[in-house]
Length: 185
Ligand code: B4P
Image (cartoon, rainbow, N blue to C red):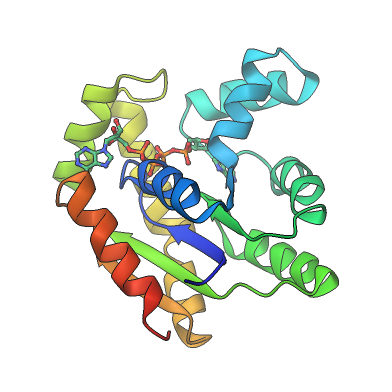
């Protein structure tokens, strides 16, 4: 199976859930920018203080902050990795490309978790994280549509995009992802 992966999809699509399973099974480094930012917030670091209010509004943290937390982790990895929730816009995709060119570690597959808004909203409301109120969720969905979704075409043009329907249960979606990642992209 491919060992340098990127998971793309709207908030609440199950990127984190599925990325954890694949990384455990394939011994890949799981890099979730959302989780890493939440760790910084819990630790009350300077970076966390800067990110907290932005995340609570459902907006995107600056590219500079996000890149800094990804760069140091990718630089020391040999076995393979899965990027979950990063990049979130075309500028981040460009910065990531420059970093991966430097490290000589190209992305081998991009997996899009495709799912309807009403299912996403239901899932996130029942999760109940601080940024999971209906108003903030709608803002995150709008930001996904306006700013993140152009990445779908970007990676499609590069010929490395695979799409999986994320509306089934966790096991079904996991099987579909594995089947998609075994096929040649
Ligand atoms: P993230 O942490 O990336 O959160 P997410 O998109 O909401 O969640 P995900 O798709 O991983 O869904 P999950 O598996 O948890 O981002 C949070 C915030 O961080 C952003 O709004 C932004 O402010 C900031 N941020 C992160 N990365 C950034 C970047 N690169 N640049 C700038 N800012 C950034 O699943 C959701 C729920 O559904 C869970 O409760 C789960 O249990 C459930 N679920 C999952 N799969 C299911 C299934 N198949 N069936 C039923 N329920 C399921």
